[in-house]
Length: 329
Image 1 (cartoon, rainbow, N blue to C red):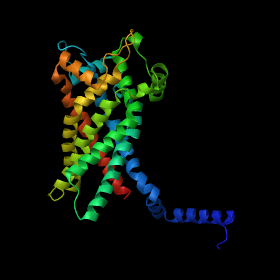
Image 2 (spheres, rainbow, N blue to C red; image 1 turned 180 degrees about the horizontal axis):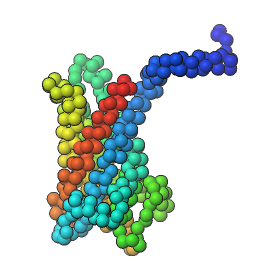
Image 3 (tube, rainbow, N blue to C red; image 1 turned 120 degrees about the vertical axis):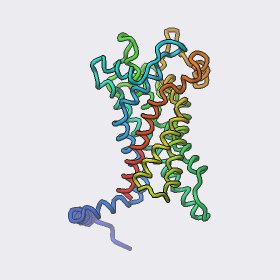
Image 4 (cartoon, rainbow, N blue to C red; image 1 turned 30 degrees about the horizontal axis):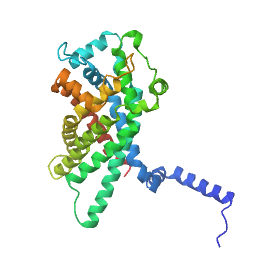
């Protein structure tokens, strides 16, 4: 029977490991990255870092997109804002940093949502590849689409509170000064919404959020994976293949998800009237009211801005995730 490890033995082993790491840091890092725990965690870590990087770059475009979606609520006629007019109005207030309103919520959302969706997608794809190899077959578009839909839906439920806080922070400036909440940060927004409206309110709009995420992931991850596979044997360089696949994925992600993103924004922005009622009862009621009062095309208002927000965000996220995956493989 082997003798129990003494504290001196443990300390000696730890000292040897530290000495080895100091002498060969590259090998020590490589050994750590290939532990079972890190192999399982890396898709999630890389996904979160990639999403947060993209959000920091794209946040001003997202701010303009939200303001466009909330403009002219409940009316078919009236002023039709453009991305330039919204940008001009924000800058006219003399606060350029207002374009970054809600950045803390955006980063938290990415830390939760993108970490989960890219991590789940990568995990699902590895499982599907292993199953396909056992059967001697290849993964098709149907399997990629299924993995994207499942990953998006699961991640959206987890990330909804941060998403709601982001919308509240970005729409606060549209209210009369006396009615503004002036949230200090995402933590302040989450705490005050929970206290004043109840914890369950943090999952307001979760249904369209989940459907939007599934639609967006179907367009983004499934088409990105498919496009990369189709471009694999072309003369394009690896980087060009990634950029092209990302642009294709961004278009389809925008097209499929914008109507649900529009409804999600409206539902998450709404607060109770003096009589205690809400403007919209739910996703289907919002679709019905907007179609009746504002017209079907309102769901695609700001498609160009949305694409400019989604495509570069998708490109930056996927490129950074690809790079991190290569570094940590």
